[in-house]
Image 1 (cartoon, one colour):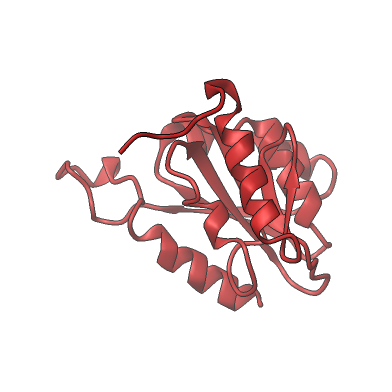
Image 2 (image 1 turned 120 degrees about the vertical axis):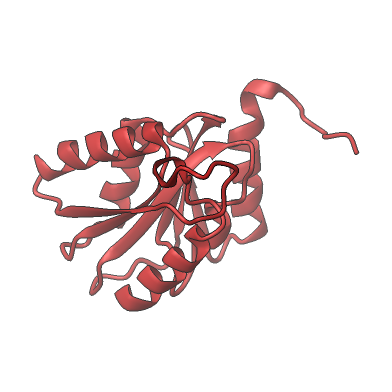
Length: 163
């Protein structure tokens, strides 16, 4: 099967714009920051976010919705989202109750989410994180488990608890 790509440099933004266009009553797309967030903002709960490199979308953005993620941040193809992008998502969904970041066990994601959290905490936005490292992997070393297949259950549990 062939992929239809207009321009490789626009593939991430076009995929996210397409998601927002498909669900205009439920999703908001933030251009340049590559953030998909819930259109309906809740003001009485901890916000839950996640994200990661593109190339497998809508992995994270597909789980933005009621009882799940409040926002998802996409990096470029196979690279972590930048701290600026993550910080933008944190600021968008923060309502004073704190923001939980659900992160896959990938060093770039962990580093960039942690940096974004530090920047946001300087603005008095409380953040916490949890790293998913399920046991579905090709390596027997538990330290390298990436948290790919089991991350969905973390999204559901965190989103339901926050709701």
